[in-house]
Image 1: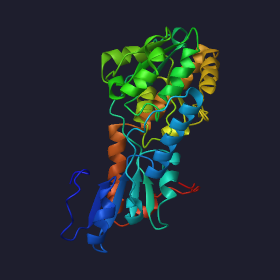
Image 2 (image 1 turned 120 degrees about the vertical axis):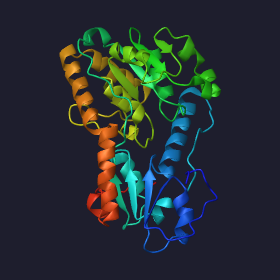
Image 3 (image 1 turned 60 degrees about the horizontal axis):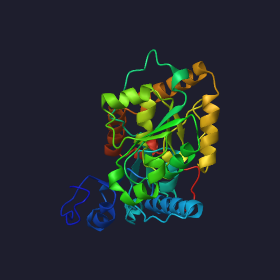
Image 4 (image 1 turned 90 degrees about the vertical axis):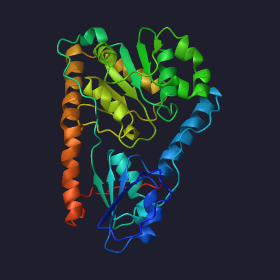
Length: 324
């Protein structure tokens, strides 16, 4: 049943039902007590996600006087309250947003998101020559994903370059508001959408030092993971929903343009060998955890636990339950 199918209603008994997004709340009354109900969470909880985007829009208006409409807000629903188990693709941040809304009996299980694009380690890369070039890559929802903050940061970073890989045509109001940064700044190169599977992206990554992705809320952070797979150093928020293991951090804080500039300058001042070691650490981390094979192994483990009624054994500790 497609997650967009709003008409289907269960009419017989099921052992297990798995849904993404919004149907589980509607189906729950028709399911028997013996049905295990699973919610697959591919975003942060809608209350956090939507509020985070509205806050970014408010900050943009306060900084620049630019008013933009919200883009792709998530529909409100109570599916998590009907679930016996929730599988979460993101990091501890993402889990916390769901734990805040979940009943105590709901097991929240992490299944690290799969990244379908992987690359060999870039042997021979000149990290010293690359240390002033950065990449932002993402789909639409540009303010939500922090592109406005990145553009403002790099517009005032002489000697540094930013390559923007995103479908500008999907948000014409954003493109108009940031036309000068996107198309008139000598340090910013707006490329449009670049396929991560293409030779073009691999060449871009080989000539750059890092991926900058200060998103306000993600459910898996694949845009940032693409960069790590390509051997780039991450400059991301915790809300980008990827793990920064020791040696890869720290996360950005509020991700104001000045903070981004400071972190870019700091990285460029480091020894090329140290930056290469950090990039290698990032590459090894995602190769071990965020691939199709790793995803398949974890999902098999979770599926077996669900069938055997022991999903609670795989649950993440909900150490913090922030208000959403």
